[in-house]
Length: 264
Image (cartoon, rainbow, N blue to C red):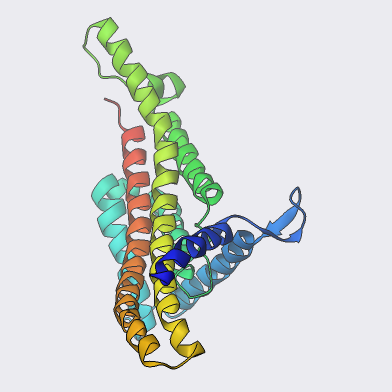
């Protein structure tokens, strides 16, 4: 039971490490740990894309190239073309960059001792803002400023009803900025808290045995096996969630682009 009493303090300490902390400079102008991991994610992204593109052939060879092409084709077909149609090809560079940037940064956070570049609300809000500005610009280019604003409400209804629907749609459009940011951040944050909880439980039940080998401590360490098994399962699940969240963010961005391009 002593282990459970220490768990709360351990979780509080872990949460404090997830907050942005300046590692160089000061709070006004400085580099936080998330800047470092974003930079690392960008480097890995360039390496991943460069290695994949450099070896592209008519018939893909090698496991890495096959993985790269499979991911690329899946996003291209299942996100871009399925949502936006063949004309969506012009949005392919933006959506593909968005997907791979989020994916790489999410996966970096699953390496023990590291954090995801997308693990802070500031970063996810920045990504959501980029997506938001992009589909707004697409809508304005497609329909003009007034045309895009008018397209938020359906035509042919009572003017009062049309105005009410227009206000609701305007609010809903603005809300997309928040939902995109919070959905990505909350899923990653919650996943890391759960992983930390089971990692702490595993260590707290096992540490007494390392400190002193007794029959009581040996019996008390048995639950750590279960905690470790659950930890490994959740860690694997978190990798899947990292991929899914990158996919969800990208497909929602594609849907918003499609809505912006088409008038009601």
